Every structure is written in structure tokens, then in C-alpha cells.
Image (cartoon, rainbow, N blue to C red; front, side, top):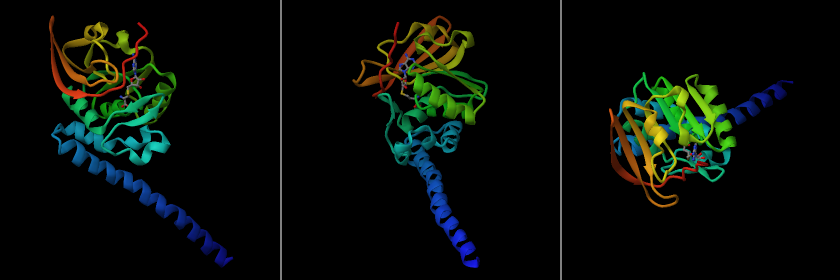
Length: 232
Ligand code: SAH
């Protein structure tokens, strides 16, 4: 009996210790990721850094990819789509100057990771995904962790009229041109970040600013995003 109990304790420890080490490892990898890939490359917005230290990126990735969750690259999430490289997520978050009162629209929910990072900072995130199973999966993960994210399965080309105008719009799929409804739904003084260019080529990450009737745009850096697919 005594032996049996000892055996049980042994088995429990045998299973629990590697599990603990393994899960702590993700925390350490995340801290390192933010230091080396995000902060060291010039992202300094405190809220962005805090959010990226907080969100367990590995939980937004299919299980067979999780061990690479904190690598310096995008990863496949199924259906031909990808989760963006951590640096790109940090860059796109910082550039909109996220504020706690913001209402943000994201086009291309994908894994839900960018939405989670935004939800850590702003008042509410509205996010639209065109691939239904991806959208449902992300909705499920996001709803477990946040009560300030709304996910819709739809063509993001048309934005989300009923919640407009938005303080900021983050588009995470490459469009041939900027969808006019998105400019329309941007608040006066608002910022939109969007990769513009042809599918599977190098695109330009553009920052769009709206001031009254004036729309200004700036190319920030070359990027490679999955295409914006629209049925319009
Ligand atoms: N922000 C995501 C990146 C996903 S990749 C993340 O953090 O993981 C871009 C996503 O945009 C893909 O899931 C793709 O299906 C989606 N997408 C492409 N065209 C779209 C459209 N017209 N409307 C909504 N989502 C779109």
C-alpha cells in the first residue's frame, strides 16, 4: 500500500515536472521574443510591448506549429493562411498609436493573435475574417480570454458599418487597392495600416491618415502578406 502511494506520487511528479518546465518555457520564449525581435528593433510603445509580453502567442497557433510560436517568422495556420511575424504585429500595433479609448477594426482575423494584442490595449476590437472555419476558431479562443472583441465572418472589403467610425483600422491581408468603404469608416483624425500590392509579390505597408477631406498616405516598408480575397 505504502509502495503503491509512493508510486502514485512518483508518477504524478514524473508527469507534472516536464509539463511545468514546458509551459514556463513559453513564458521565457515570449519575454525573449519581445526583447530581441520587438524592442531591439525599435518598437518602443509601452502599451504595445506590454500587450505582446502578455498574449500567449502559442495558443493562437495550431498545435503542430506551437513549438515555433515565438520564432522570428510567420507560421501557417491552415487554409493557406498565416499568422504574421511577431515584429510585424508589433509594428502595426504601435503605428496606429493605440489608446485605451479606441475602437479598432481589424480585417483578416486569421489566428486571432493581432486582435488579442489590440484587445489588451484598446476599448474594443471588431475583427472580420472571410474564411469561416478560421474565424470560428479565432472567435472561440478570443471569447475565452476577452470580452472586448467582436468577430464577424464576412468579406472585410465592406468594413463593419454599424460600429463605424473607427479610431484605427488594421488590415492584415494585401489588397490591390485600399477599399473605399474602409476609408469611409475611418474616423476624422484616424489611422489605417494596410499592405497594398499584388498577391504573392512584395507589397508596401501603407499608413493612411484621414484629416477632414484630406487623405494622406505613406509607404513604410516592403512586406509580404497573404492576399485580400474579396468577392466584390
Ligand atoms: N491578423 C492575422 C493575420 C492573418 S493572415 C493574425 O494575427 O493571425 C490574413 C487573413 O486575412 C487570412 O486569415 C485571410 O483569410 C483573411 N482575409 C483575406 N481576405 C479577406 C477579406 N476580404 N475579408 C476578411 N478577411 C480576409
